[in-house]
Length: 420
Ligand code: AMP
Ligand code: GLY
Image (tube, rainbow, N blue to C red):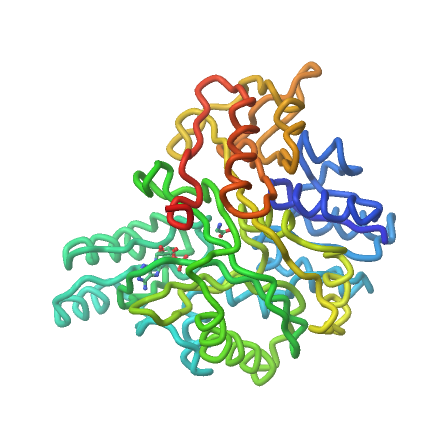
């Protein structure tokens, strides 16, 4: 097949490598300095719908896979489908599951999906009054897309009220915070469940756990993700069965009942609270860095499954399977996530890639005078396959140590819970 991957991060690089290893012809828009070595890249931003449409007219791809959420929420998949292009990724309507927290929580409630109790507000005074009456802390979520930053897990009434104010009144997340969800606070380990869905049928791809905090031991501010691993030993067959019954099946039935077409991957953020799974959120695309872990563990051609989903002909019996273990470690630039410094030279890329079982995925990189330099907060994702998590971790860190970037940092404890 001739495929186009839309996006330019490590997630897209992992998809590019998966397509390349199955001998597909791979294009990517916009890509990055690393992707440019593995695919034909086009300097078109992931949200430039007009240019992407023109590119598809010109190149006649057999499949387009959209990596990030923003273009899906903006309706890129609908536009391409109207032109007869086969697309992996939901249209605007299905993408609301990620694009609006109020929409997704109401969807979960309507279809009996296990999730925390919640209320939706667009009036700060009413929300504040509610919190004062309840006299306890809530989780405060901006309704719209906020690049993973629009959630405040408050630990007091005062903090809850301050978060309400900052979102609705001060517009800390712009229009995304004009409406908010107040949610019961749960606690427990989180897992990222990925499910292929063609609107009627689904197939579980597997789970990964990501590490959102910047520092070792899960300390410091939240980030886009500092690393991930899979499988997750604590998420056993019994938990998976319970998750299918209380979350995945009602979700897929709900999509059909509501007439929401969904051809893509549902990445459900789960929290295991008092031993039972709850859906924290839906995402309508692969997780980053979770995707790197999934692609590293895939046996066979992932794209055969993605194209079946795009056609609405998913056959759960023939879907790609996942074996072994993988760990992804993100290398971030100096002062990420607060104010990442860019423009530093990256050394050791080839040496890192030479470690057996390792792929070096690029995120924020670009080429300058023949050298590869940092161009974003998350710079590289080093992903390693192994027989088990310990083996994967030792390979990943052997490769990470060969990378040298002034001021860069990474977590040294990815998968620590599973390895303890
Ligand atoms: P979300 O974007 O909804 O997944 O929220 C981002 C992060 O906030 C999650 O990964 C959790 O760590 C945390 N979070 C979200 N909802 C809750 C909740 N109801 N209780 C506790 N923590 C939560
Ligand atoms: N790693 C979490 C996400 O992609 O949203």
